[in-house]
Image (tube, rainbow, N blue to C red; front, side, top):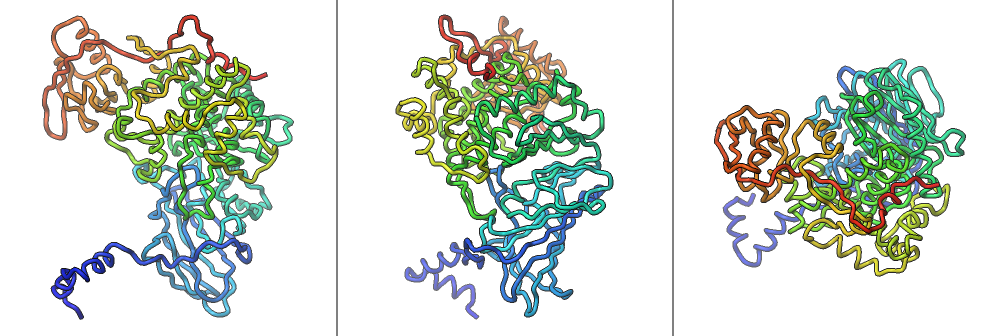
Length: 638
């Protein structure tokens, strides 16, 4: 055996140094078969027992048709709709294989740890698997997917699949055992029911993973497109039966949203569409798109406290738009063969950015939100991105990589680091495109025409139709001749100064700041339980005094504040949001700075904020003598 000393001495020689370094830095190749396009022989059966509510454990059994010899099974890594490799492998447990009643050992691939290798014994035609999905018990472990009253089955979390095959060439027969008396909803079609077990029709793996299930003790189904050839259902589960009760006028607004979407795109790309909608303080919040359904989770009060929740009503239209944008029309980089192949996210500013645009527009056109709220929400978004200091070093185009880089984990300096800004800054870019089309065409055309021409093609087609950046540019030029490629690239790759707000100005509005918050800002502060002082002191404060959302190089930042600091007192008075606001007002006309007693860890200190500009909140103001194109944009289509 070569000693460590001899090995290091050999590595010191020039000829051997490179080989030694390569041996340390280059891992062995994963022994995982390359993906082919041949069909997987036979139908895989997967059974999910979702009845262990008290411990929140899903138990699985699989029966996999096999032939003797080596077989590699994969646990999905890349979650569709999350845009990154963020399916937690740690929640897969208790994995056991058997054939003919006898155990079959497995080994994990040392490079691709999501791959499990087995050797199927001679004479075996079926490989049986048993394992559990240990769903999170609290929010620190991940999103809660099972409570005493609601559960969600996301297939990428509860199944394995054979490597070497395209997901669309693998057929799976799924079944679920639900708690007694519970009802469920899914885009999957039922084949048969046996007591509490529901067997669904066989589907290819792509379609199965794209078809989650919500189930609940308290359940209500609402038809949002009565008489439509392709039904649209709002399937509601909740913590209690009272939260299911929607008033007729509330249902009418959701139906108007569906109607406005169909008028916008002039097509549908689903056989039937199911909103899976959870209203709960326990079940994890979510907004995730699927081709013929969507997962949506909000806090209690969606229907019962309707007047307080206007700011959350863009969720359903956003996810519905994804049936056209992101699922039917998909970026070419999202055309991957299975759930362990990396996605390319370069066009997420179309996939998510334009969906953000249309989700907000449809919410306004349908009346789910008022036109005033739509403007106030737009002002808040414009201000946030106009004050994003991180654009000085990082363009919005680079933020499409955040789901891969960060996996939606918390960050300490979001204003400087940036995150998934392609959503809302992408929306601002598409407002710029819309108003530019309107201006150039004398208001005869708009982004409405692009939506119909690009997403509304091949009515009834469900299979994905992929696109490139060049396809987007060509489609825009068919709507309105213009040099769109540099127009888009400048906004995507530029560094400002400030956010892309030309679209606002062209719409006849400008971003201003006043000392009075809009109703949307007040509602957001109440909903988030904080005091937002981003555009005055440069940070927000939660009800307990903890600092959050510090603006890089803002007033608070320059005084040394960070998101691990708590404000104890303001000018010798115990902290409350109103006390701090009063101090800001007083400092405007006074000479003394604002004194904050703050705590970091076990240390207390006093800092001074020499700020004199008063409270500042964003809102939109009309530009005199201009056409109001926002009103045209938010007006319902006839």
